[in-house]
Image 1 (cartoon, rainbow, N blue to C red):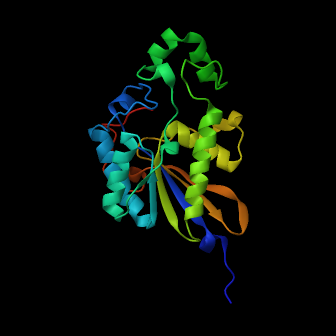
Image 2: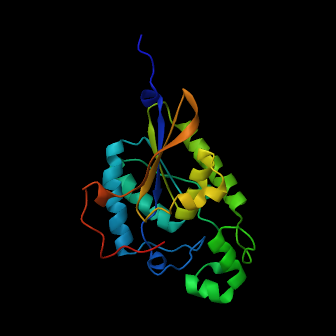
Image 3: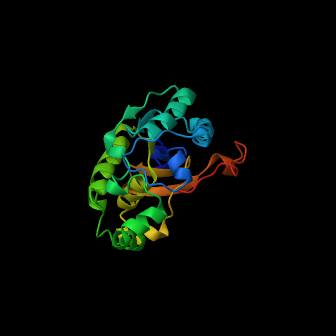
Length: 227
């Protein structure tokens, strides 16, 4: 009788950040504002989808915000899967900071901007969601995604940079004070998380993967944005 190995029993989640939007390109905070992908974001999403298909995923989930749903649509085309939409995968609600560039944020809310830069989480701008709230909803969603997979299966989750970072840190058991050790993912990039029946923890096996780094697409240097 063959003894199961961690590799053969691992459930794998690919956490994909949506493609670029016009607001990403100029570092304008989006939060729950429903901004569409720009042309570069569409190209990024298509390139990522073509590589993600090689993982042979059996399930697909995405945030209900347009930029995530658009990105997921390319994965649907490449894999034949239909995305399950889950609002818990949304980005932080950034309150009145939505629509502001970093410079505008610093000028209008200097105290809150300093706290954001320091990662202290307080004070927040009016209407801004707490990290605890984001952590609770996104980890619950990701736990359910893992549970929906059989041993050896792979699923794809399309969501948002800051919220996914919170979720990854929580699933790894890292304290939020360690957040600076994990940079934000690029638009159209993905991370790989695994769980197996032999160990009661989540492993991060790859982070910020991009098609251009795997040789599957032309360089995006002319259209990459920050944020």
